[in-house]
Length: 234
Image (tube, rainbow, N blue to C red; front, side):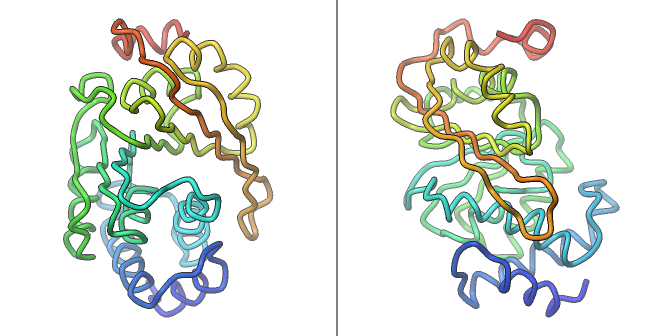
């Protein structure tokens, strides 16, 4: 990877102001993704521009829309290669970020990136969301590109404190998924607060951030086993 080119593209397109220290941390993560990505089968993105725009800029829109408060305890459900978890943790060291994934090699990669970039606020957890043992522990749950929202709501809302939020990072069909998931969201104790339209430079279709507020306790019977959630979404 051409690190200086990556930094230039990210600096020119970031939706928020980023410091040199933050940029250096992002570059360490991007370089590791470039070197280790194929080995771990983590991402199809190859060029500096695609990685900068579709992983880093996309993740930084959480800050440009004011969705993460300093000091919050956050969980990234199905973190994959670490987006948005790594970007979130590198941007704001006061955030306590938990990167959750059921695939060990992905959690290992995220932990490697966190160690190399000096992110002491990051914790990697290898578990399924519905089997993790967490319940109403987090201020914010994040999820990006994991499953449809009617499935994600049952996985993520039980993890969020009453008054906290679940932010689903979606593509252009975010509003359609939100409508489809209204029943699941309500049953699991949430309500749709806002849907933000996000324009990523050079990307043809807009992305969406579906913000769901946790307004009441999730019934104890949820989440169900994943096979049941997928077979019969709420």
